[in-house]
Amino acid sequence: MRESELSGMTALFPSEDGNPQERQQLMQLIEQIVSGVDALKNPNGVNLKGEKLRTDHFYQNLILESAIPQSGAPLAEVGDELLKLLHNHPYHTRYFLTNILPMASTPGILGMITAMLVNGNNLWDVYGPAGAEAEVRVISMMSKLVGYDALRSGGYTTWGGQGAVFTGLRLAIAKFAPDAPRTGVPGNFYAFCSESAHYSLFKSMEATGIGSDHLIKVRTTADSAMDTDDLRYKLEQVIAAGGIPVYIVATTGTTDAMGIDDAELIYSVAADVAVKHGLKRPHIHADSALGGFFAFFNSYHFEVNPLGFTPEVSAALRAIANRMKHLPYADSLCFDFQKLGQTPYLTSLFLVRDAADLQLLDLEPDETPYVGHRGYGQYHTGYTLECSRMASSISIYSALLAFGEEGYQRLLAQLVEVNLAFRRELRVQLPYVEIVNGDNPGIVTLFRIYPQCAQGFETEVAGRCTLAEIQATNQLNERLFEALGETREHMFFGDTKKHLIVPTAEGDSVALYAAKIFVISPYTETGDVAEIIKHLKNVIEKVYEAQETASITSGRE
Image (cartoon, rainbow, N blue to C red):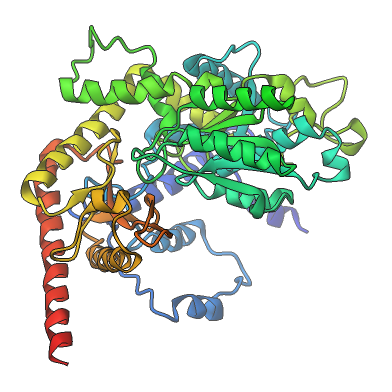
């Protein structure tokens, strides 16, 4: 290859020497993307501007028309194509009210750019020293926040809450069967979680080979927290049948209802049962991917109330914090910083109370012939499932420095305040709509509508509704989901087809469907609640009108 051609190739990379000409070119390309996104923003909706007709054949057409070009395009043209990808893409405005999909904050983005510019592999500090340093720092910071001993704890950044749940299960298996990584998992191991737990444990059971049939679901109480009496009963059942409980996931902030399992009580029950039967206590993992961020209030002086929260907001925050203070009872836990930490995907942090546990999963030196276990380098993470790890810890570190404890406290309090205001207005303006997670303070409200003259939520929870009645109500709420979905370019609500599992009058069990508002944007304020309620009321009334029309038509037939 000629020297001139090689020179042309280096134009596709940041400069080797930091010269201003190539830096300016890179900055211009970044400016093209940033200004292009700004031009697409629409604060009166939740989608960026631009047409994107996703018909039934949309993805098939992409397959047919896509091909690698023979010659590379100029970078400015590439930028134009990248911006086209963003047309009609959801974007976080005050009307973005769905699930747990927050914005990436400016410090989070800066940290990610920093990581990308050096592109180190965070597996080993010889390859990624910046990421290793940031990782040690954020592990210490978050360990101290939740109440772990930072000199004893450990952890690493991983692929979401799923990666943390999965590693927790790997640790549990290794504790009970140290040879399992080589000889396989014994067939009598069992794991436990609540009916409201995230499905990531279900997938982890499959992936480890234990099998999802060995996942025991524990009943939940009205506040979506694990029923520890039922946990004790099911632990005893498994042991009586020859099984060994190895893993319990305590969900400390469910995705739908913000239910918070009591980690201290779960620890007590698990320890009691283990001692009774002469077994090891199961490894307890707190799935705190969402709710764990409320640990920022562990040190908040609610009596003094230095940030001036209203009594209602303070009471809600204190109720959450009273559960989060039990996180140190968990052997491991996690923080999805791409959720309430306000950093880009994917920036999740897995923590263990005892860093020595991770050595149960480490590889032997001859299994990693070119990474770590050398006379040089002091930070080697061969115990991670990933063989290559991006330095997402830098983004987390950047956000922690920029927000500080007080910044996160203010942001979380604002989200809670808006949610409380929404509940107040919903009860006044739409009294026929029932809030089905009223016992859960936080940032999410689940609400459910009922057919005319149908019995309500309390009757369902009490088990006095028939399966047919609950299914009819679920179908009505599913129609509400669809109606809200048709208007999601203006306001984007969430929904779930699995709130509580309730008994039926016939003795069966069934899940309840519910729509949700998830207050997640920093731009959503209490002043926006009236418009949100007005929009919701209009959609719900149309659903009822359609139901009445269908009922009249059916009667005539």
